Length: 247
Image (tube, rainbow, N blue to C red):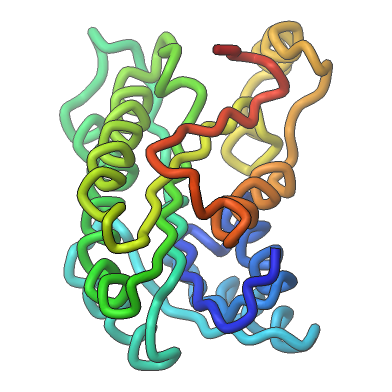
């Protein structure tokens, strides 16, 4: 999966899955634009990639802010000359039963998890069209396919991300641009670390492989979909969930 000469932009890169994706793509030879809200963590990540012989640059960006998305992506393209690979990974949760869910908690999750992906795609597409090559990879969730009590906003945003993935795949396939999604199951990250032990134990019982996933499990799938080896795959949702959801 040689990505030499490619430029990847990863959102939510300061920690968890995004952090792992940035490191893995850099190891495969891609230059990486890392984007998130935390400038210090981004700088540390970019420095780590550079120290190991890779190429990286940090771009502070809150994906809930359209203007910040435009500025960061414009800066990334100015710095690297293009963006070949977009990994829409940034996401949040604001869990609550739907009868108690406040409208701001609905709006911020939809804006951060779904609307931001549309905006990032819209801003990188001209670069991909110009070179007639591109990889759009959206990080959705198993709960976007099977639902989850207390996460109506999160599940809706991730289901919407799947629909966005399929629509974009049809729009840009003729230009040699693929659009795919990865649906992680239970992954050990800061987002899941705060969940109660009972929830974790119940979740583990639903995973046939008998373990929770790691950010590296997702990063490996991202690197594959970003590569030429996956050039005939588009409009696909790749489940990476240990068998939690099959079919």
